[in-house]
Amino acid sequence: MNPALETLKERGLLQQCTDLDALSSLMDKGPITFYVGCDPTFHSLHIGHMVPFFAFRHLLKFGHTGIALLGGGTARIGDPSGKTEMRKLLSYEDLDRNAAAIESQLKPFLGFDGVHARTDNNKNWLADLNYIDFLREIGRHFSVNRMLSFEAYKMRMETGLSFIEFNYQLLQSFDFLELFRRHGCKLQIGGDDQWGNIVAGMELIRRVEGGEAYGLTFPLVTTSDGKKMGKTEKGALFLDPSISSPYEFFQYWRNISDADVLRFLLMFTFLPTDECRALVAPDRNINDAKERLAYEVTSLIHGKVEADKALSGAKAAFGGGGDKNAMPTVRLARSLFEAGYPVLDLFVDAGLTPSKSEARRLVQQGGASVGEQAWKDEKASVGADLLDDGELILKAGKKRFVRVLCD
RNA sequence: GGAGAGAUUCCCGAGUGGUCAAAGGGGGCAGACUGUAAAUCUGUUGGCUCAGCCUUCGAAGGUUCAAAUCCUUCUCUCUCCA
Image 1: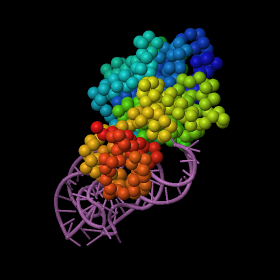
Image 2 (image 1 turned 90 degrees about the vertical axis):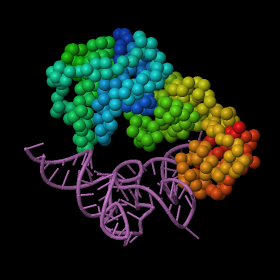
Image 3 (image 1 turned 120 degrees about the horizontal axis):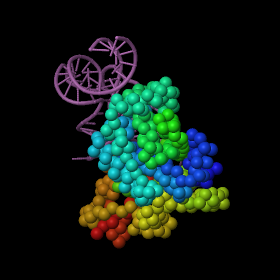
Image 4 (image 1 turned 45 degrees about the vertical axis):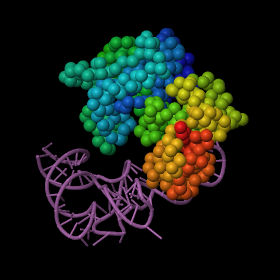
């Protein structure tokens, strides 16, 4: 098999391919152009979105040319694949803003140079489409019977599928066709939920242009307990540091299940395969592997400086040395402590708890610590005497720490 | 356009005049067990000046000593028919 495809396979980034043999020999002959799409439905990507972009980088490394397609046009509709409900329609302004934000998140990761890696936005060709022309030229190639048989729509057949969403597949197929025409793009990669859309695009290219194109999907990333990673999940881990701080980001990876470590090392880092396997060997401490994973991914997304800080902060918080300065820190006025800081207020102000009621619960359930000491009395106040050199460590539960700093 | 059904706390989903801050499940949080893991068990899960009070059951009015529960109007969703 072609080495690039081989790499994707051993990295767990290959779920299905429309014609693996043919694609492999095509890629053997020389660099090809591929694309991956991403709809700007929010102003930040989350880690689940990154899987295709890891594959993107692998393919770049093998000399292929990638296009990251921002779905400024398709996002006006919303992809129904795998969703239970219609997505809220966003304003064009929001979509433009989101697309710009996402592009700037991808830039450092993919290093768009305009030659080997570039972006495009399908708004460029979708926004001003003429409906009648589109139906004549593109719509006639789609069989509704066939579309209805796609797994992607099954779920929505239960809850209802609007016509606008039903068109999504045509638009995505049209994207593929456009990229094929404009840039000779012959491969679309994406999550496995995109299979139907990808196949449809491939077929459209064959019908309209008589061209050969391919599709390749990655497994949908779930955690070993079956939860969807990122995507619809609530506690999605975003790339935007103002939503998910680098420290939180690091901790997410540090705390994944044992069963996921190898898979995630392969998927979300560029460590050599052998090294990934060695890290999880039975004679090695699995926690070291998690730490390495956390460090590597954080470094890829937030940069080495932030990764070092997060690692150091985590060590300080969990008692493995490290640097306290790198722990999540909150500044509070010393005078508040001198006056006696009610614990509940303190926990809220430190951001460990969203409300005083929750702070109260935390204390009552024995999850609160002030300066390494369990704090039992919800009514008591924290005085300045507990400050150690203007500093105080607060703990909520076992994993959430904040270092309070007073001037 | 016609006929029905529905909108409940983060999500799903009970509740049909007071005993409802609202069953149950999911998720979250905390405790025990551990390895900053998983699984399991336990507790907890609107807010506050917390044995009390305040705000929540699509929106606005109304009936009542008392409404998530009854009436009116409105908004939205779904199903069936045309």
